[in-house]
Length: 604
Image (cartoon, rainbow, N blue to C red; front, side, top):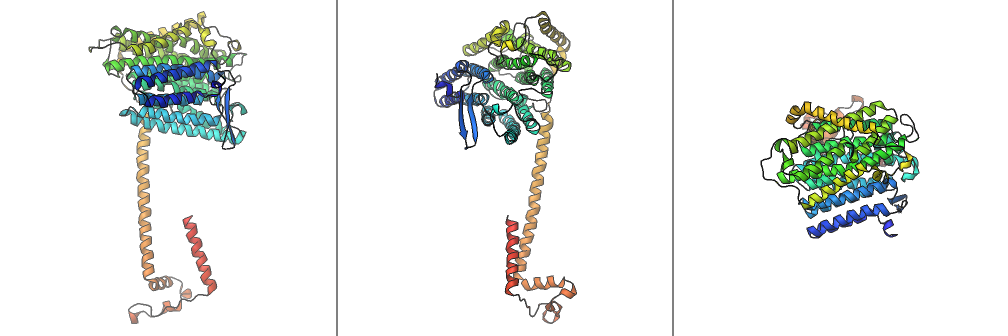
């Protein structure tokens, strides 16, 4: 075990990715399941404080692997869901190369959350952007263009975060997390917040989520829905361990915007992608509330917020992966992506419908399911800190979540009749979905199971899950969603895809980019014309030096004109009969130095 204590999980999973790419498909996927499952087990048993420190470039003390309560929780759930996703990939027909890319994505995500310093974090952060882009691109078709947009946005976000880290290093003199409480305030923190905001889906920076995640293979979407946004939440906590009020309110805005944007979608995976933004909004709100100075202070309020944020990270990964698996089975069996093309599948796919129902109740926060526990902790922290506006935003987001999943479940599994011949999930898909559904119920019915693994000890905060007001709140949100759906069912059935902000900035970037290219091309053409004319002039001057000197002399004031310029040119047809150009040694050297200086200035 001592050896394993210093082996970063990223090494294990990346090795499995290499093997999965070259081994036969069944063996390669088995290796992937064992590697990711082994990482989950390792995360559970490795002692706190285990680390691997190296010196990079003779200047940076980088901590490539660091185990603390926060990285342990992230490693546990990343490994667990990675094993389930590899099994689901095998059952859903993903080939070995795709799964190898997916495992490399899992590995870089693990490298990010187990980093003990900002340099290691940004290194794996950027690698995670590369591997996730490759996972999207691998499917081809519409996924390629979406992958390019995804890569551009994450490249910008990563660059902003890197700029913040460099600035922080200049101010602090160290890249270690322990060197300061988060990133240096001011410009470094602002740069990092926006850069991380791309990954978590801040409102206005979120459009890559619904644009990208519906495009690739159904198994790829299961991986994608887990790692990028959750490492973003982890990074936000590392950058702002004492919280920030505007981050909390941005989380509230994300919760509302994502939920109601999802309500307006008919593409199933696009709907689920918007709900990633919404649910991550609760986590971001919890991180923002995680400081004693935020809102009304109390002896355990900020600990409750931080515990709720990471509890929701854990729970969301479970039910969101389950939702993408259930919808993936529908697409796998029917070939249809839109709710307009399916219906009544509950009678033909009872297992898929049942696991979807568990995931839907979990994400909506209904009592008895895991989302109820962690979402309630964040909403409770906002209430305890007396931030009423944020509290209402989180509640409204809850109503929107119920509405969205009532819509998805009703139109997919209840209303209508799918005429095609269809089977339920196969064995591998069923094992993956049922196992995750069981965890959603277990953590919902026995909240202490969750509290025991959270990075904030349960004794550090006071929270009771099954109180009458809390249960009434969860049931009330569900009833509000039911009433809202009963009223809006007709219009919602006819709503297709509502444009998002990317419809604006895609056009701005397209036409702006085209205008920039045309302007640049025309500028180069103009410079080229000037250069050609200048060369022609120089060539002519070299061929006709006498005429050049004469013409230049003619343009000088009469008092400065040389004698030869005043000669009468009519006798020989206009040519100068004799030209005297004399200069001493000193003058010649001065001219030579001036010419060489001019040439060097132009060249440099």
